[in-house]
Image 1: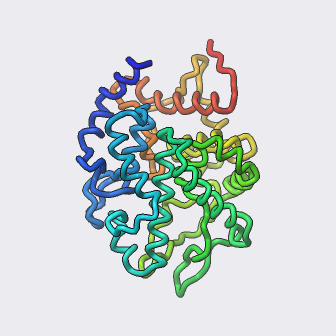
Image 2 (image 1 turned 90 degrees about the vertical axis):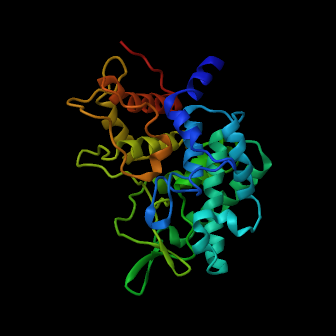
Image 3 (image 1 turned 30 degrees about the vertical axis):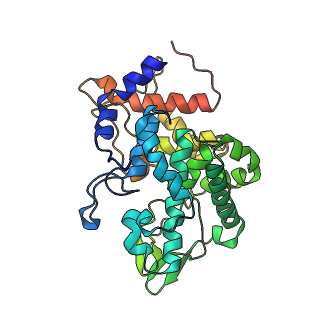
Length: 328
């Protein structure tokens, strides 16, 4: 096991990420950006996506890079009101108290997800943050806003100011914390039912002070877009979402997720390898939500490299569901 972890740490994809880490434990001088954004002055992928990517590769909290970043992430969970802790969101968060509260809540959700996935499950700071997030989302799911979360502001459609729907971050945090799931079992059931509903097709923004923020981090239902057969169009996003549902124990109760998973499994051969016909390249992600989880295997010239990530994720989901895997 130790040799395998050492090999992962020395692999090219991991070393590429490690070399970009700053002395203060951050990446890219920001927290949440999945890639560079010149319009916002973001030069590279941010700290939390890179931290989560390293966790996905198997690096443990004992690794120096994660320990260095942990100092910042735990500080983000605190009530420290240092404006610098808002990083790339500082311009928006400093406009008014309500905007600052929204920014800090978003950042705490993201930091909680990262720390949970890295294995800090019993840390009281994370558990406290986890219960706060779960309570806020639970209150939303019990309210009339869960059925009608969007409203009009002039000519624009926006998220209702009092709505706190689940996000990719809050769902990922909960999925990584089995003890929290047991303690909030009723909430987990309601969340699973909510994520099985179709997401609104209507475009909207989140009004944060005077700024309009894209809702890429929010989940207003099932986020997976499918074709007429129920097959997911964005395979990396679908696999990430199905894995989260499997970890929550709600995947068996989601009809659209089960259909999408079955469609992917139709292309698994008798060796257990995902091998669709005429596969010329590995599936490409269309959403930033799956950045940290895709790809883990570098695509090479061999056909096998194009199949590796989907094969691995399907097998992982199957194991999480308790299936016995048998191959010819």
